[in-house]
Length: 223
Image (tube, rainbow, N blue to C red):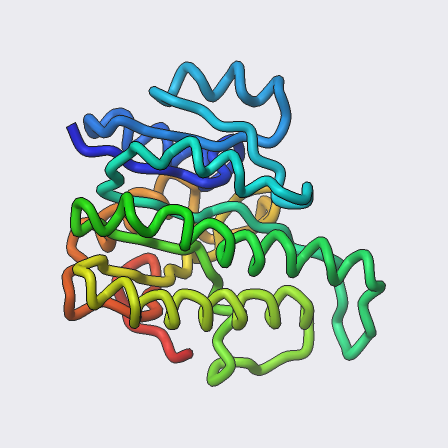
């Protein structure tokens, strides 16, 4: 039975990822932030971990997975941060919350999960955003969120160089505009549609896809 880890598995895309992979026969490991979410998540996952990316030392929770061989790790956890339509300097607390969650979280998680992925020649996917594409930037709106996703893309690209040499396929994924708390009710895609499509892209990913930025439909995006 293959094993996958979903970091941020209690809401939106992460919860649907956990549900679909469990239904597909995976042994799912999922992280949650609040205790009440852990109870709900335990019905989907074979193993759960309480992880709050804003708390110092949260990475120790991942060390509990040292004995786990991972066929797939999907880093979903992320926050949108303050709304801005122009060049408004974010407050320090806002900057720290977004960057710690969207960027530092991945930089702590990837090294902790590396050996488990290498042991299986597994796959690593980070849920990024088209808004993190520097080449595709056409607006200053949400510029803190854009900056965090561009940084996450850089983290993934760096990881792909080292882990790719060990047989791990690493990709950044844009989930599309999805009807979640973050995406809003006017978004194009349901959570189910987005996750089903991304799972298809992940399943098809091979060494030729390592270090790429992909749309939920498999289209390659510009960094």
